[in-house]
Image (tube, rainbow, N blue to C red; front, side):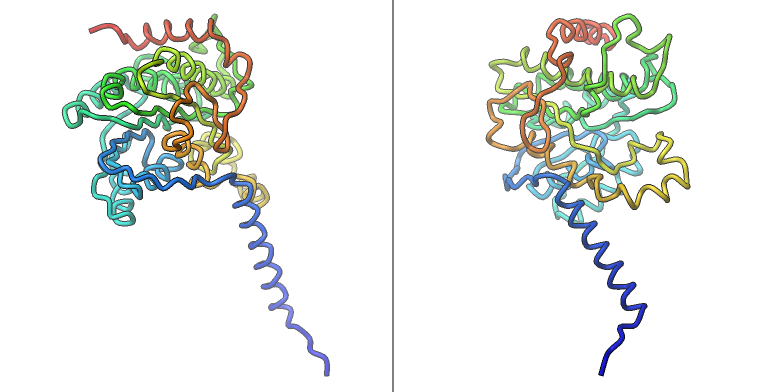
Length: 325
């Protein structure tokens, strides 16, 4: 007697197998997982852009390790929604939402003032928030939006918090960058993209600026027991791509996403190198590094140019009025 397998069962089996392979591929290509189980009781952390994507997953993992976390976000409603979910999942009640709009230096200064009233310690600062390939727009100070949010806002925030970080040492700063820094160039003649705006070039420039800032800050912080490193989290499926054509075009999104999905990291995978930079004991004395997949990597030649880094620092001090009281 021969048995004939029903076609619906065959189709179901094929779909299930394909889905299983896709998930395994995605997990494998997601890169190494951070295995550290540090207890962060009494440790204070700030994460910018913490209500979604990599930032949200980073907060979740820090919360599981008992840290006190300030979610620095622009949208307080979304922040509070995610905060409650994380508290329920981790049973860590020491998670707080605080307003910090990186497109407004006034908002950044108010955030820091409030933070210093509430805390006298800060052990981990994760500069995660960012925008990508947005239409030409500017921060409240007139800085091109990608440069202003991704880099300049975090430059100001970090410098305003350095006194607390020093008082809390050993402490760590983690700056999120991107492999696209390799195509970036610091345009000294048109740094603010006033004459020629290209959303891709502006994004790459902002991510290159982050690495230059990381290296220069690491040099300035020698001997303080504060480390600062830049992390490329990989290509991650977050809403940072909301301005890109592929994301906004319905047909392109429907047709391409199933094929590229296994090769794009989930936010949790993207957070692993961030956790590595923030927590791993092996990095205790490592500063000014560019990290990819939980290990050190080579940045572009321009990212290692000390003269450009010093020029960038001076311009950034001026644009943020850092030394103006």
